Image 1 (cartoon, helix red, strand yellow):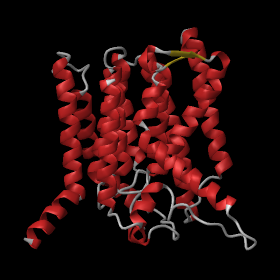
Image 2 (cartoon, helix red, strand yellow; image 1 turned 180 degrees about the vertical axis):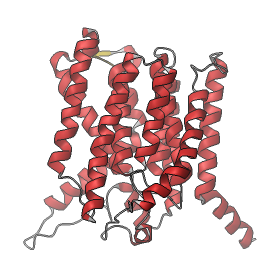
Image 3 (cartoon, one colour; image 1 turned 30 degrees about the horizontal axis):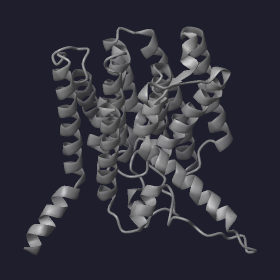
Image 4 (tube, helix red, strand yellow; image 1 turned 45 degrees about the horizontal axis):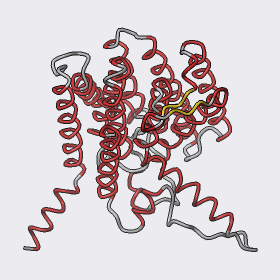
Length: 362
């Protein structure tokens, strides 16, 4: 009896089975929605871009990962992090350089280079560039410190300003009216633009903080993008395709990044995913949808803010404060509390799927 329970638990918690569950779940979800909309055999569907980008990313990974190894692009692991992560030192990072371009390129082709898709694609690549600079500096210095936080923030704000400038020039004035649930609207006027910049910077940093466990951000990115794409399907076909492509590329990346990971996405990937999600939400007036779909990213970010704030507030004369969590972001707290990485990933996948379902059923 004990042997059966052990076998069942190991099957449930394996990285490979989480990958299969994620892939089959997202594919079935896309097929059902496409079938209901009578677009199941169309290029302008959720399923075709999802599967195409997934297969291309998986295939490209077999070529890109050995090159990253030859370039000695091994991850530098934080010594103050979970001790179990130290064995991951040397695993190739900067995986975003091969899965992000796949989603962007296929989205541009399938959307026939629609202006909106071009804009969010450039934004996604711009944030990927910031991440690449950070990853490259980490590798060059052989430490876990890349470009300075001020430089990273300045670049994020700079690209956000450029994107917002394009929004102001290309979109109708009604873009400053924020859509809320139950058909309500909030007219912000000029206040919309600081909010838009904040969303771009905050979302990219949130996805960056969430990337810290094998298969976590890749899978959550696949769920979030497909959920946002499904929500946009009735109103924005081109951006639905973009989201489906990015979801597929994330899913294909998880095939290499699932536990035990053969490659990490690095800031190159994580910053790009946040920038892409925020850009689509701003362009389609779906900020409230983004807020709910990004629930896990929000929790991870708030855990870091709470940890730092509590530590500072409880500092004694010796300059040492108390910790609210064993470690932040929250996924590390769970690990240090005894959770396996695969338990964290599986639970976060489930919660993210529930949040997406809530948005679609609203």
